[in-house]
Image (cartoon, rainbow, N blue to C red; front, side):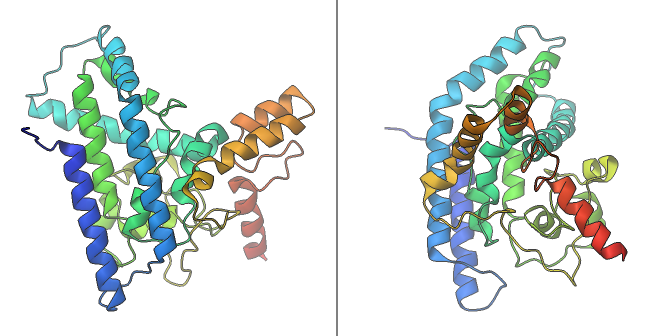
Length: 298
């Protein structure tokens, strides 16, 4: 059998190799990295489920993009360097908004929260990926690219490049990159902020590759050396069971829906921001930041 690896297999192999190197160096104190065996294997379990689900759903995603591609406005060739430059920026712009909505709408947050559930921050955190994101349609924001005329295979390839770039920024081993790089690109420092649950940092720095979107839309916050990030979510779940990690927020949504006393409460439970409460006093990012600002204003 003549088997040739494709980009996903190559990216996964490189990622696992880098995790092994960082973990080994951390045990010898050669780099700053904290690994906990149970947490790392929980991340591997999440990655395994993510790969399995993506394989099961790949046909649906490709069919959806292909259906949109039939109504394309232009014929864009993947052999054009200009086309790849254009899709790099367009894909990154879409990624910013997909990622931001995944934090601001509980329906998509339920599929994304598992990526933030680890209280460790190392390269293995990067592979702690969702089992349900494809099912709830987190791929649909890329449909406009197909309508423009980018071939589905080109869209999926660029998504892969974007996500692979983001792998290396899940580390504490790198303190800061050069100032110009920190300004233009997503870095370990910027992404540590994104994974932090501190009020100062909460739900900030949604970038994929370019920080321009966060700077443009007011969601950029720089890491402060005097305030180390506290990793995890607002209410940590304290489990290493991949099944609980994957589905705990969906279970919570169902429970709250059963207890909902009005249509408004039901809709807010599903589509409101994480932490939403009908009385407006929930632990939403907006409320947590407002309380933090009020404390520090005095």
